[in-house]
Length: 235
Image 1 (tube, rainbow, N blue to C red):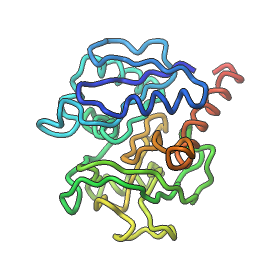
Image 2: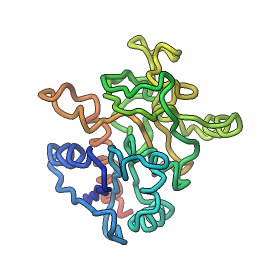
Image 3: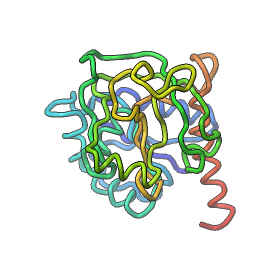
Image 4: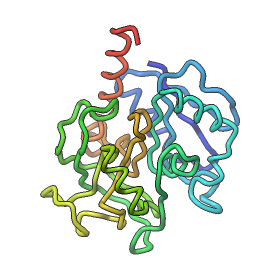
């Protein structure tokens, strides 16, 4: 599988993503943000970090990096695009995903393990989980408070676009389960077609027991499984 990881000025999780894929036997490539083409790739990853120092607004400047024009084209043509943390913020800024990420509820930067509930198990990113699985994935952000208006939330629910929710250890969706105040405890969403995933937690940090757990490994394996099935059927 041909995997491209976009590196912006200020990114700091691209190497984590790179190594996570290498653990699973893949050979990802870094794509500098000033490049203008993602042709030939099967998956584009927009990693976490602080692109352009988070100046103006998180993801607002990175959205205009030269590479993003072709990432948008790639995504709209059905290509897999995975935005993690700052990558999720960039996806909302460029309009590939609805809503916005605001300052955390308590206005503090947060970093630590977080329970999530898997809401969909039929996606390229989640087919190795079961719906309602409770997994633990680290969060690391200051502006992860997912916000959307009433009509937008209604549409997300109607189209089954909510992929992960923040929950307690018991799987409860409530204020205690949310680290940042996100509306409806939303931690990750997809577009209507299901090929673009944005999420605030960092699955690339939990793919090996030696670094704290393997709950994120399923997302990487899901993508590989999806790609292998497509290749088998000549898609």
